[in-house]
Length: 403
Ligand code: GCO
Ligand code: MG
Image (tube, rainbow, N blue to C red; front, side, top):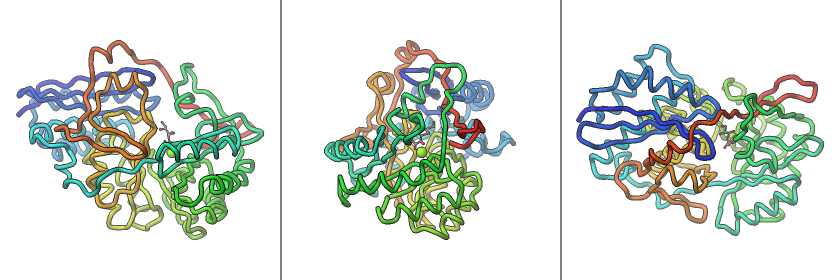
């Protein structure tokens, strides 16, 4: 079998997605996700101009060799754009391989290790009681794990903390990114109050999670972890910007609060200190940003040795294709932890046909051969790319801050 053609499809059925489609001389095809939120066209060009021309004529079964060809061969290793491009190609190749074997992808990854994949969903609100109500509502919908965020009194609601849903904030049609304001001293005392109230409302038989979204320093994060210990959170996510892996040593010295990190990581080298020193409990890498199924497996296999569990990033900007690949990996690996799942709109499901399914807090990969997701190209063409950026954050004095 040979790779005959590679198409790059950029569409925006509510938000932008970059999809690669690999077509073989034997008529089989596979699709992969290369979406990097706010930088979509860079990946599209990387794929179209620098990857596709080199792969024509290659044997699509050589998933590992093609991964290494793109990783080592470019000379310029790692980085979100390169790794998302590699990820897109890798997903499409695994799709083809599993279709050729006439098996769902998870069978090629070792088969099922579990019956279903636990997910967590998000709740936000303008005040603590609104969040508590939201948590109760999700509990009634079957969720066993819920992420809770609340707006900070005295600050306009910002991304990931309150009622402005992630989706609304992300689909920002202005040319320049929306600007938000952050104040750590207002946030730190609020979060323990939030979880005290939420525990009162839903009890202890539910996993509660919180995303700090990289906004603290190590010692501030250590303080927050200690303050949250009485409420037994499943995890505290991205407490600090993650490029300084050693920073997590400070957090670890002070608190037993489990920590989750990795949504902005794209290679095993971003995570290896965190994993091998057991500074984190959950690795939040995802198939699209970490070099596909091949890249994800390398990270999770290392993590398994160090008692670190998986927690694939799964917001809407991870396309339904990458979500499908995540679910196949989730169901197969021994060290699965949890899967983030924001769900998709009807328009997105029209463009991306999915064999995976969601029901009352759990996902299933489906039994279709391949990874089970395909793109309707004609429909995708009706939703052209729209320029959109994530917000940026400033402190109250106007200086830029991490978010
Ligand atoms: C999460 C995230 C996302 C990211 C987004 C950036 O935990 O799901 O923090 O909401 O901010 O994916 O593109
Ligand atoms: Mg996050």
